[in-house]
Length: 335
Ligand code: 13P
Image (tube, rainbow, N blue to C red):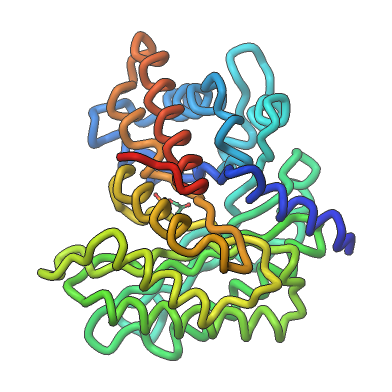
């Protein structure tokens, strides 16, 4: 294992005030987002949309890496350039989602376990050969009556650690994503307790699977009140709770935290990340960056609407949100 190369890639992902863009929606999820705007759900429309994103002028000013999906990494631009090469050409590192989805967990009603370990070594080798330099695996933890359970937290943490070890063996930086969902009426305090417990479990498993912390990126949720909780804390309160939780559970050896957006609006995700960097940056051992999907893409998808005549305007919207997130990393975002 080339630890130095892994460390260099991990550092590059969070360097220069940049972050990741997640364009790794599975075919089903991408189709669902298209359906909302009446966009035809075909491989060709998905290809056109992803081409629009990877070809956005200036995207590399704010984006260090793009997370692709199995279908997308095999697709090309109209001019025949593979998406992975098009990204490298503008200084963006290609990455790939490698889990095969969160499935109902047997014996644990209402909870999910992420699948995809079988055959992963061979798939990682193929993706590395296609140009991927990092990978992503998402575990999903829901908050509800008596959940998440120890059984679900433990099984997902173990799978994340086994995935991370295989990634590092293949020379890919693992982006480790344990997502505590914001769905529900739970409080910010509950989210904080659950997130801390989940992160502790994940780092314990990463340690026991001999994963090199310097060569990985953590992709957590922010600590938020449930989306239907009557009490919605301020931006600064969310920033404080999130950083407090991470400081308790995330080892200092890890180079960067890249938050998921999880259904927050682009503006709120930027504002909360900005507040964390304004208030705490100088005393944190890791970079606080972003790995947003919806929070960067949503306005662009709405503008595009499946009509290529809107492509340039959609790219401008995408560029704008990505630059807002860069500003948030620097503590310079102004809503
Ligand atoms: P969101 O930012 O839309 O949550 O997507 C990030 C991601 O990659 C989820 O796995």
